[in-house]
Length: 136
Image (tube, rainbow, N blue to C red; front, side, top):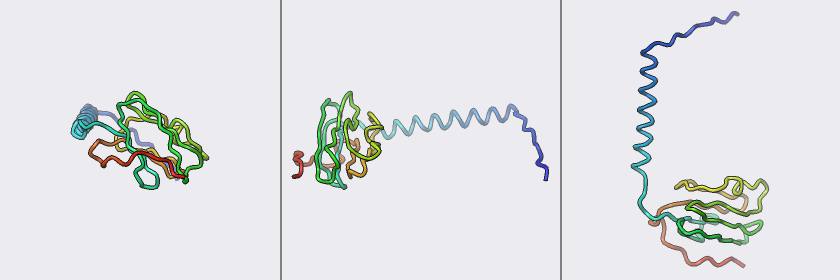
């Protein structure tokens, strides 16, 4: 069976509609981005198996090392220039270390199979946990 070749012609109306849709979606994106921006201080929340273990301010440069029984090896978290990353970890594929620095709010970074993840949220997200003490 032969396939038919159909030639499509671009008209002025097509260009107008495409331009309108592009401008409208760009404006909508900017509006939504501004509407959901927070004025709160941002914090990095560290979790192990859905248990909050630490909360650190995102605007203070520091390096923390966490060591839990679930971990294959200690995990080092680095906060620098209001961004956070997993500096050092031990896992089969090292997905956490590969991701690098992030400053995205509500975008969890998961370190599997270590059952560790962190997320950037506003200060009102959770109450501050007790100071971090490594499990023995």
